[in-house]
Figure 1 (cartoon, helix red, strand yellow):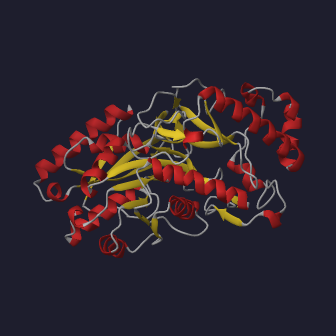
Figure 2 (cartoon, rainbow, N blue to C red; figure 1 turned 60 degrees about the vertical axis):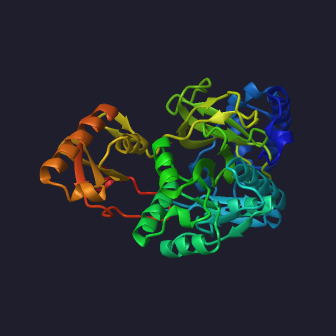
Length: 434
């Protein structure tokens, strides 16, 4: 189902006309109302009247998460605080939190965009949607909650945690759609198996997963273990929350970006040059319709690429590939870039391992060492030492080939690594500990 076909099926030339109109309006607003942007544009020698085409977007300065922190809490807002009806923020674990505001108009747009995501993922008004994202200052729970209600679906706002209760409610309340992180979906499947609950006892048929990178191999495992169709969705709190892009259930081949509200670019994260479609780099987003916190060329730090292709779902929107990692999650080990998603993909191709792993980086003398902790599957861990060693050797050879550097592999018992309802902790970098 397409929730808003008048926008999601808009021909490309008409979409670009709409984008340019909204971009010009945006630049005028932020120049007049946000001192930070006026200063940045004056410094770059750019005025609103210089934006005559979509290509002129490149003239504008980037915005970063540090800019939001330095203007904490409301310095980048483009409306007076009485017009802001909702505030969300990041956790602030690496510094001051980033604060995001929404007007009534912003909340209406956000609900429509998350409704688009849910509809693309196969959700309709007959569904019962269990949202296992946290509610609170995190945007995920509220964003998809209101989108599901806008669709007319029944919503179970269970939030995160209490996994066994999640499964009981899933079974008793007739949940048909699950919303959470992909790593938590696997944890749910694992707990169901421990409880002796089979997918056939549930009405669950679709899952919409986001908030962390995941591979197609992990998708297949989730689909098999939960008996569902799984789709990806993407967003980030600073830009809006969930609702920036979503995968359609018909193709499951990249995420449709809602271009009527966001202009995407991909840049080389080092040179900051805009890359052509198909080349992998850092995703940059410009918001076209946000009232409280409009952002110009926001550097997301997510690694992806853009492409256009006809889609069986009928949407004409540009697609982004599933993010393969983040520039700030990227490890540089002995001069080689390493992403956790590369390790996940390699492990899921090997029998005898589970999808739970952790990368531990340390420095011995002047050299970096990468150790990959991998949970063995139940049967494998109780096999002979010889079979365990053969598996370790196989994993070591595979990861060294994929990553291009030598790694150490440690096989650990099932359920040894920490589980979480939120984003999985994939990296422990001991080099940063003084």
